[in-house]
Amino acid sequence: MPPTDKRGLLVTAFAEMNRVAPAPATVLPLPAGAPFGAVTVNAEACTLCQACTGVCPTGALPDNPEKPMLRFTESACVQCGLCAATCPEDAITLTPQLDFAAWDAPRRILHEEPPFCCISCGAAFATRSGITRVQEKLAGHWMFSGNDGAQRLRVLEMCEDCRVEEIVNQGFDPHDATTRRVRTRADYDDNK
Image (cartoon, rainbow, N blue to C red; front, side, top):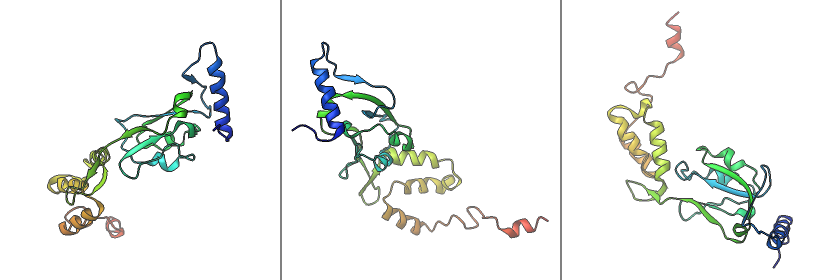
């Protein structure tokens, strides 16, 4: 059945012109700003945070509620660039093009990882790359240094329920006198 939306009709027309061309192409590159194209994800940088799926206005980048995965439907992509602008890892690039095979294909997987499971209860709650990235960023922070710091970084490998329980059991208070004293107005008044 032929498409009834304008984008689909336009691509069908391009595909027919390409089919009867003397040298048909599989992929036609388009200029920047064209409303058709692909999204490429750098798997080394992507932590599957799903920021891109939340901003995609056409649903071209759906997640998978069953496992950590980023999928892509090229026929739905309008190359708006919101996904690339939103990606905190700068892992997304846009390629303006008409890929006739991709238009007929179902969603393809751009990136997936096995779920990371809580070290306490075993529940899946994140990805290894996401946990590692957060631990790397926090490793130099004062709350995550010293003898207690390794234990606090380990807490990040727990699901939200086990994490709260562990922190309560540890009795950690970031504002007590043994960790770091919060300065008050009185500290500044004494220096006059």
